[in-house]
Image (cartoon, rainbow, N blue to C red; front, side, top):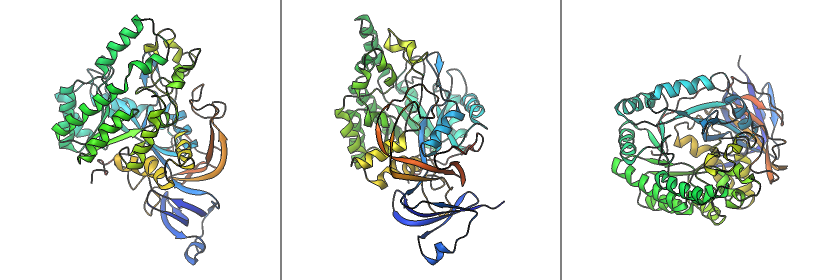
Length: 467
């Protein structure tokens, strides 16, 4: 069954262009664009016509950092692949790249198979996987080659969480050397976890147990130090490096310096670091626990430097690190001991809107919004131009976005499976109206019309950001 859709009268925005154009969709892909009102565009006929007059027509968002159903600290993230991808669609995201986890002592393949089993048949939108490498050994290194060949082309390592995900410098170097050979991209959680554990122990011994101390022990200097060390190890290995969830201005400075030297070093930040701060961690009555994530929220003055990094392209991508834990029953595990609060925040539904607010507030341009939320993550992780743009041949992952609609963010109205919003009460200008995934309507004029199982696993090529 061939189906055709025409989107008429909108302002099409990609990372490189803005044009008033109609979009023709055939068989799940973008077939053509034509200037609105021209003979070509007027001649298109279709079973479905969507009027986008006064709206933006943008590529579906690519969130390259999510953790659905992730086990952590004796509990697991509250969003399943079904609830999490549905919420992503509500927020204008049409592709996620989630993290499969290798258990220490286990094979990469076992972890990947387990994540395929969680996701398959349950997703409302398309998905891919990165691989968390927790146990670097000869077998793991050989498996990395195989995974790259089958479309899992990025590997995350942790300089934090000793005893859980932690890799020492030797293990990191070995994995980076392998990635240099097989074309994979190493993603780094850059915090000095060994030093942080000392500071945690000392803080607890002093009776400093509230959520705000989570931010105080995970010092910005220890993020910067780890970022610097990761860059140097990657340089020794001759490998590219992608630093996840950059939160501190000192870490941005390390990335900028490396990039000024011509090194293939990249950085990601997240909306929580652009909009929230240590003020949230210090909220009374344990409310600060809602904002515990790692890297932690920083004092407000870091926000301007992160926005600047996005403008100068020293930071290339904004992802969410969506890893939601309910306040009741999950975050509460850390009452009386901040080190036991599950690390993670909800956000997969809010990213596109928060970044549009960044446009409204004058931090970034409209095209840069699409670049950091759609095109760059797609290029960084081998999904472009199938994902991340509106161009002939691309998947018809398209969002009709109302730039003037006003909304108030609230747990009362969001679709993530979590009992609070990190942005409760925040007023935003701009809202998703309609979402298509591979030409199928998932959100139709603010109603969910998608279904679990529409989303399919999407293998990825090696990073296209390096070419």
